[in-house]
Length: 386
Ligand code: ATP
Ligand code: MG
Ligand code: MG
Image (cartoon, rainbow, N blue to C red):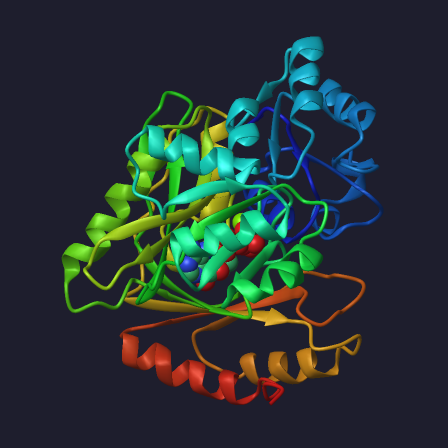
């Protein structure tokens, strides 16, 4: 079997899990990132040709493009002009399309794009970075007001919640020098995510809807499938997610984050043009993982089934507590004794508070079983600071 070579901008955990899936199929993969980043650990150096450099460096992108057939990304914060130039100069395919990454990487452009295609989102407006404009926006949208950086946002770093107009100066200080927009507060009852895969010919398949639980803006837990008294909600979420992904060009997996509103309606929060934290569970829980389907999609191969192959699953992120690896090791030691639990560590050289260091997927024959298997893991987490 000989597959085309895939190049990935970014060598973090998402690139690592892509490389793990690629290795199962002997798909050759080259990672562009600095040093011996997590994704580069997976493939033996003699069978791959990774590039040492910043994935923001246009020359390095060109170097990668010259040695692969298809370029993809594990992060949307990339230099789209450099991707377009590499595409033009080398003829490499880029998936998803650079235009898709450009729209998505500016969260306000992304919102406007979704609105123009009739996808439901929270009302949003660009705001000038001055106190007067912010205070006026508090009056218009009411409080709390969600202020967001348009670009380079992740893990909530780029969001500021104004609980009073008096916080305008604090908000500007926190998000200084960043282009901003404001969102109407969404008093959601749950956060839902759906992974969607789109083939090169435009076929769109969705994974089951899942519940995501965030702690301090970082994904903490995922439950699959969505627990809900009304099964129509999960189907609605999948439909909204599929419709949203159909509006973008190019192949690959997309992570669609959504809010379930008190009236049962669904709003799209944001879309990631790549595999997503809320889809890690698919590795052990679905017939085809998000990573395998991303590779199949961008290589123009037939997609695999996204259906669940277990009745119930959960995913717990392993976040750094401090520079010490001890709390992580303690949690992992517990997880290794729990039936149905699979530990993934990303091999990051340094631990920092809040840094994604690994995750644990738990599968079981029922939601109740998954909950009971999760319990000792939650008990092994370091206590929240009071
Ligand atoms: P990610 O790491 O997922 O890319 P991000 O930095 O892009 O995160 P968002 O997803 O925009 O940030 O927001 C982070 C969290 O803040 C959401 O998961 C949700 O809990 C909350 N949030 C975002 N927008 C709103 C809103 N309009 N109303 C209420 N809560 C919101
Ligand atoms: Mg985001
Ligand atoms: Mg988000």
